[in-house]
Amino acid sequence: MTPYKHIVQYYETDKMGITHHSNYIRWMEEARIDFLKQLGWGYEKLEEEGIFSPVTAIDCKYKANTTFPDEISITVSVSAFQGAILKLQYVMTNQNGQIVFEGHSEHCFLNAQGRIIRMNRAYPEFSKLLSSLITTEQ
Image: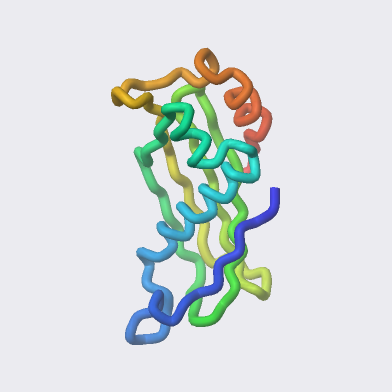
């Protein structure tokens, strides 16, 4: 998978010129959307299929500051998948290769009625793809 690239914008920084912590959560979402698109299961396709994937948990570790106009490379990987719950890992590095952030997001899969979808039964091809991408690095 190709890492997602984000250029820190001036408006994303605080009075000290450092990226505000809340922006990393948004960058996780940008990278997740790109990751799923690269897999051939972009949000448009998921929603057309009647699949919704809300965030159920977020875990963040800030390792170093970023500032305008740093280029942040975001690698997304599947750390766990149990058919209805997907856990993704994010590693963000700056243009010098320094890790600036590590985090996880957890998601469930719901249908249009808000009921849990067991992806291995309802969408076995997508389920197999996600399972094949599970990494053991944490």
